[in-house]
Amino acid sequence: MKRKPEWMRVRLSSTAHLNKVKSLLESYQLNTVCEAANCPNRLECFGSKTATFMILGKECTRHCKFCNVTSNPPEEVMKTEPKNVAKAIAELGLKHAVVTSVTRDDLIDEGAEHFYQTVVEIRKLNPETSIEVLTPDFNGRRSLINRVVEANPDVYNHNIETVKSLYESVRPEADYDQSLEVIRLVKDINPNMTTKSGIMLGLGETEDQVIQTLKDLRHAGCDIVTIGQYMQPSKKHIELVEYIHPDTFKKYEDIAYEIGFLAVASSPLVRSSYKALESYQKI
Image (tube, rainbow, N blue to C red):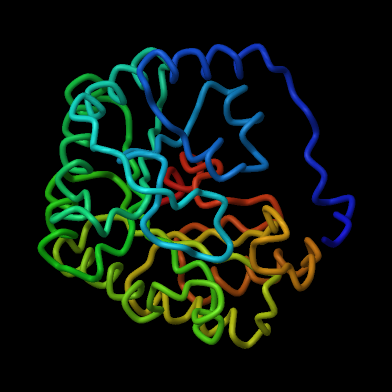
């Protein structure tokens, strides 16, 4: 595996809040994508008493080559989870809550109703908290996407992840155009809903391909975009081709704004939920 350049090194921060947040999540039997995906910013986010909640268990039914989330047999859906997420958000005093999930192709509704109930419970207990959902593609099923939109989250996020030509090797069980369709459907169902997506760099994509992906997202109705560096979780995952220099990330940020995005987060350590509140507040 390639040696990390200096700009990819994460400074360690205080673990005081980290331990408190972890303890709280354990008490409510909750998962976070921060830990499951080995996010480089988890110390910073936990230190600020924030977290991205991962509902519907820890096991994903797909096998994306970049992801550190495991793909063992899926767990039974925990019916108390929506209320537990809401309670944890209240105890943490979050201003902006992010709710994501593993992909659950095994469920009849692929987890859409669970997303709906989670947003509803958060609203009941935390009326001042803005809510962002980061959903799977639901296999492009409009009825399922519509159900999540009906819960009225403030931001609907679905990540495109990489450029079209790399889908077969990076996301073999997903489809580029279908991911774009998720954004289109959200806007078609509710034109006023803020939409968001994200892309990783360093997998061998070209500059032209990145720019085309940004154009495709914006044309689909995407309002916010995140651009970050792919970090290879292990030797078993798809190989990292290169570390992209921060100056290039800044260039893509400028291009994304020129294309028409309302908010852009672009730097090596950016992940789809990193400083999500700041991006939302720019809209």
